[in-house]
Image (cartoon, rainbow, N blue to C red; front, side, top):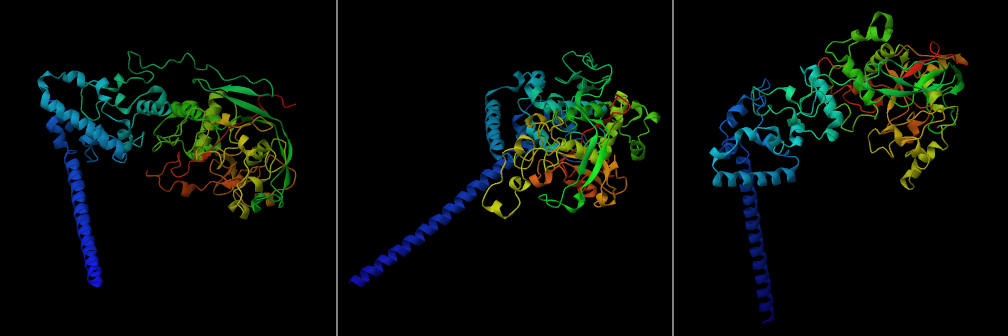
Length: 529
């Protein structure tokens, strides 16, 4: 009897498990079917045809088909939802906006008469900005400087990129006719861009622009003013002297190309307090922008007497956002090539009448050390700050001390930072170590120090395939921001994904940690005693 009851109990449990399994399978299939049905419904109601059911604006479809979003050379059709909904990769925002707008459209279709709508008002910018998410524009238009853009367009896009938050503008603010063709619309109706819209003339107010450069009469710090622009920057007087260049083998993380240590004598010079900023670089860009190119051999020859400012061709438009979306203004300008940096110096020299150039590698290290001979110009052992080594598996690296002076891997948030976040070195220079790698005027030779005589004055290496870069950058370990640490460009690698043919001579597509600072030769400007 007991055996039969046990068998009956097991049989019931087995049947219950089967029943539950069947219900689970049915439930899963039903749920999947519901999800698929909802998805297919969503897909249908994202088509242009479904949008036209509710949107009975008499010219909506006609003007859309005539717009650059449909009638273009690429053959790509931009659909209604591509512009009027947040991007699909923002899943929550996309579908919540879809539900909200869909419900509103259906309600209006059922309860309102389209004959009563003020179609002219609905075509105005004030109405359009409510229904064109800026994220959707940026999703497609990641390159602000497409081929064929006019100089005015470049200027406007640069201003927008640098001041997007402050201006509180959307792409549609200037490109109201992009999605729905309007033959009467022009960029002269732009709102919020200096020189455009609001009744403003197309002439930029130059009242605050400098009329002449700074007159330097003594070997002391000065603030340079760039004529024809509102831009100024600080230059620091670096006294001449002799120092020991390189690092001894006993220095932690010493590399072979840093040896042997040797005496180098440096003449006095002026050096920029901080790396060249976006404000400075965009002033150069706006002043020289051109689709033409100054041949590199002309720039590198520095034949200043043979070329006036108007003859200097500046960078062609970059592909994408050269500031990586981190912000401009006082942040260091990045991603430009060594050639672009040299051209900037050429332009700056002609604008100011002074001799501006990139620092030699010896000048750079002399300035970075600030009369110190330790691994950094501040106290600390590279082993304590570095993330390398066996003990880092158990104990974190020290950050006290270094983070006050250096933007590097441990405090950068993987991006360049503004110079005011760090303290200056003994010479008064900021960000000599970290933040961005800085170009020098030297070609890279791993054996340069071995070939050099002890006691040399103002050395420079002119033979090689790559350029010396110094100082480390925001993603560098503490071991790579030592004063003696050397590195060099990787030109082909940094240009690998450049989509342009031929590849740009102005911008790097694959490295965002490179910048530069300028020096000014002192011997022709002021007494050095």
